[in-house]
Length: 223
Image (tube, rainbow, N blue to C red; front, side, top):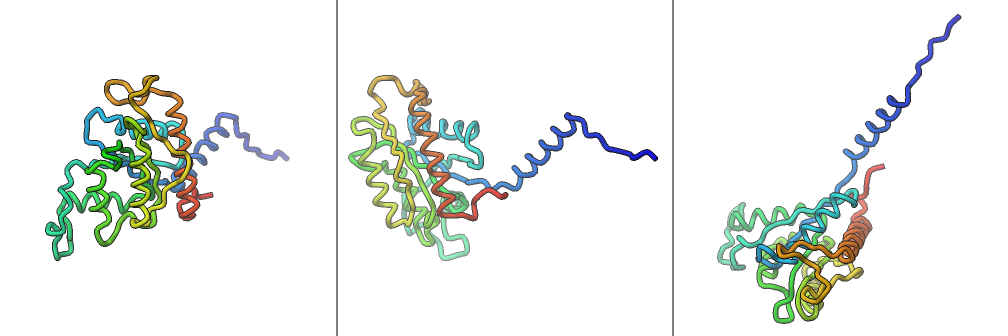
């Protein structure tokens, strides 16, 4: 009596394993990070930091997705623009707040102006914090490229603002880039070219991911 046997050749085994990996990847939760640049300059070095963070995330951080949200179209904060209706805010503000609400975490990149953060960033935060505050309870990290102090005073100010927002910043690592001191850190288009800073930026993103998953366990990858 012959017994029929099924022989799975190595190529089929590898294909089956790949299917399992893809199925698991589909069920994995994604840590959604909204990046906000505090500078409006086209060749902003801080915008370059966000571009670099997106590249690092795509190439080497599983389960995290970073998307930049523009703030240059937001009007100056003005409660007179709010409406007593189902859609309370002007369309551009409503769209911005919706994106912020959908985020799990934030990455802020900004220079330092007069010992503080730039007006466009403060304006965006003020709109996000209008009742109901759509930043509350979420995690955040920040990076700065600036002259002088490298942005440490503006970062300290944002941490203070974060207390009222109920926004939870990671403490380490900190990234303050003295952008105009040698060696060269950015090219003429604002792109980050310093490999050491890129490594620090990856460490910061990994710390943000870890902190976010600790605060919000439901975002953890599915097993």
